Length: 221
Image 1 (cartoon, helix red, strand yellow):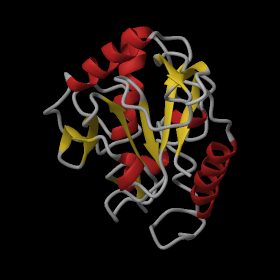
Image 2 (cartoon, rainbow, N blue to C red):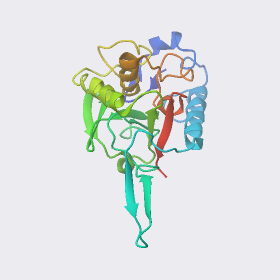
Image 3 (spheres, rainbow, N blue to C red):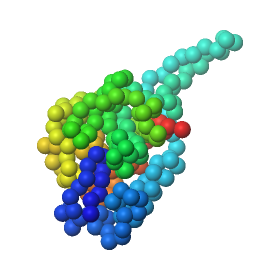
């Protein structure tokens, strides 16, 4: 049996190490995933969709003046898609019609994200508000905007490394899968662990939304 994550089908040899993946239940959704795996992913998505969207405390504030002359200072990014460097992106979409468990990236500029796809770590389009049927953006609670930007630079420094086809091996830095890349950026730079226990040793894209170490700043409606 194979489980698929972020552009990757993992060999059955891993199932002896990962009880969720080794479930004897038959595939539940036509993708090769077990019923328990499907249920876990659905629970993660449901949780992400129930989280409150809050103001990005690291974003800038702007002053606007109404026609009446009333002036107000607001956070222009509240609830809107963020292009701030170092923002975490996640989607529950099947990646490029092939991958049923989602994808993750880290914002790099107004036009680009850093992500790991089947060809390895690359820069991709920062257009998830348009290109994904569902998208989330989160920010790490305990970092500054400058630290988030440095995490994005760390991830960008991994460009050219191959895809990590063994998603249980999150500790390697020779190759990366999508959510491992984002997780490693904050783990290696600041010792912040964005993983949860939902998928044991693997880091799932939706865990980057549901971990208590982040807050949700955008969810596509």
